[in-house]
Length: 141
Image (tube, rainbow, N blue to C red; front, top):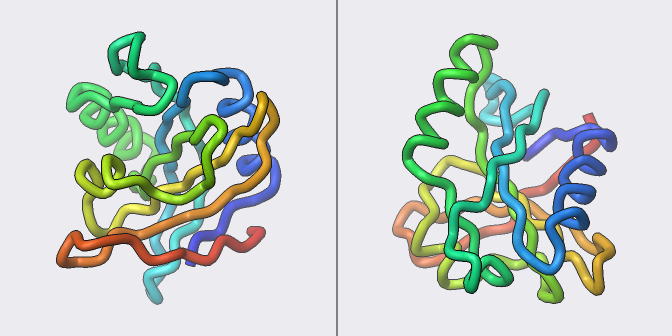
């Protein structure tokens, strides 16, 4: 379960709208509870480092970006809970490309942006054998 207040959810959607027609991306910071539930406390946009010609359907978070996120999380006494990105004019469902670049444990939030307006918001977790994703419930909080 992923807990995320409406203000943070709206911020992810605004990032998707701002980046349209390209994909946006960023980091989810927060805490993991004893039951394994994740509570997002902060998001941080990351510049999509993919080639310009591919940004409309791909995003790239570099290893340096991940290291910077881990260092920031440590300084804030948070964890990196996962990442978010947008799908311009496509459903908020992970692609094969998303699966190939994902890691277990992390939450992968996707917001669908149709014609410049955020329409859908879902979170996913990669299964342990990396064969696909399972939906992760998102609750206010």
